[in-house]
Length: 486
Image (tube, rainbow, N blue to C red):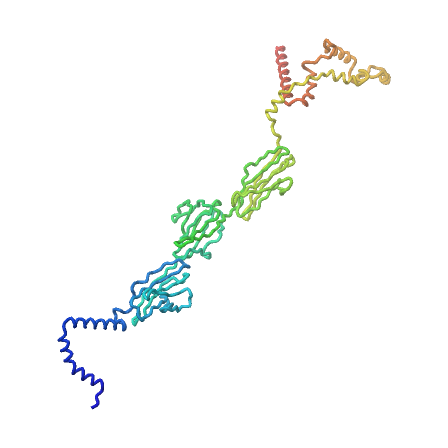
């Protein structure tokens, strides 16, 4: 009788089952407990090998988010327990791009890599992190029911000025409104601060149109109302966030206006032979053309006679200087400084003249201390005149031959009559002193005959004294005459 092997085993199990229960009942309790423990151990080994739910792979903790500066290395760690025969993969959460699978990197980006510690801590490494690497990444375990968790990378980016949205140099007319803009990119979003390059203060208006004088201003847009020339200059837009370094851009504000000229001294007196410098202050923007004119007809150029120069005070103010060398009276003129730019023209006039400086009082005192010269005697002139001729008759009378030629009458003398000659001889005798020398007159003709010579040898104030004395004499004469008539 041919039985299949399975049927034979089944028959043996049925026949032997009563004996098995009888043997288990006869065993002590300790033997029964140990057999039960052995059975549990066999079951746990089976579960480890065949995936019991309690010992299957699972995440030991969450992935910690990472914040890193651009250009540095970012590492995401995914802790896993009881991985067993399963594998770990990394994906980009946004587009499900597979980056790595277990020990193998799938992406072609060489900056990405994977690593692990004892098959428990699985790491995704990104070298030289770029802005595009920011985002979330997924760690997966390829169980029947896929297990996954997500970790994110925040890439910090230093500020960078956006030149397309930021103002370049600004040009406005004086009195208009100026608008300066500055925009920057970065993460976190940069903050904008405005300063003057020279660290000076400037005027701004708040939302309520309240005027404020500040040294710095915060905001992407800087508005300057009713701009004046002193607000001209360079402004710095500084962008900063928590990531160094901060960046800045220099924006120049140009305020345009027509030339204005200021002349401090409009009248100049110059001594002969001296060098004189005249000047004008010019304010203008954009830069003006400056030059000098003489009598509004001749443009002056730098040369042997004229020296022309300009001095910059600030970006819109200059000092024009004109030096006239070796001043002469012919140089007297109206000199005009002229400035012109695209917005207008201005001029300033200066008159220069020749003057003789007043005498020094010390020189006058020195002249007063000089000795008084001797008086001049008119009789000496007569003596010298007569001495140059043979006789007095040659001067005052006609010769005998001249008398005969004119009829022998008592003709008119050239210099005086015979009576005058006799009278003159009597005066000469009276004017002689005890020694027979001519006597000097204390007042009269000899005094005034010397006046012309004394003016040549004495200061001007002596002539004034002589006139004063003459007036006193005349006044005295008038008083005496009036008293006699009474």
